[in-house]
Image 1: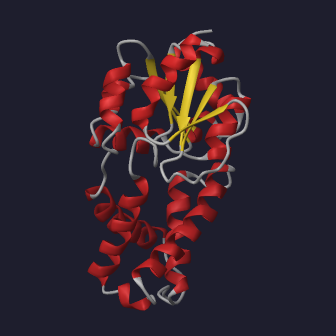
Image 2: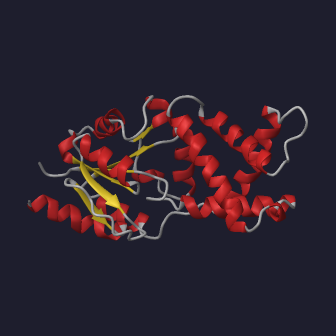
Length: 242
């Protein structure tokens, strides 16, 4: 079947999440006079990302809601440098600290340079949508800020509202339903090999793994590798000829 729709991951696929996270954290720590508590800026980012990955996994598993994982990340990060007051950090204080980080992070929000040109080139021939392991409100705000929201209309599916996270087949299939297409007519593009590449393939979609870093990892059958979103239109065109 010819591909008629394309679903995208958001963070580190369309949107340069990693850069905004690093810039936001270092800006916040500098403003608070806390950067010197770490051996190096890279060390601070490493701690923040390790905690984020652990607590975000709990969010995806349904153990925490989106806001709770933010507060928990903050508490653990501040505890790492001994900055949690006696009696612990209240929800209000944890939320305020994270909001301060968010101001610096959001100021650095940007789409990858290849994102909008490729989306624009695809709109004539494909229905476009998003499937993301996140909160719908958060991702809509982010896509709106970086100018990409109009390309997707209402075809946005996020794990918090859906009730299951990638690589669960159900969230990919919900994305296909949002496009009004069967899985065999939908491509999925994401930057995480197991979660996005294998997850989409196993759900019956045409899977494209975006390996921006050029890791050289060999993809399994049914997963095509692209190095840039610029490669996607030609890859989809080749698929149509198979």
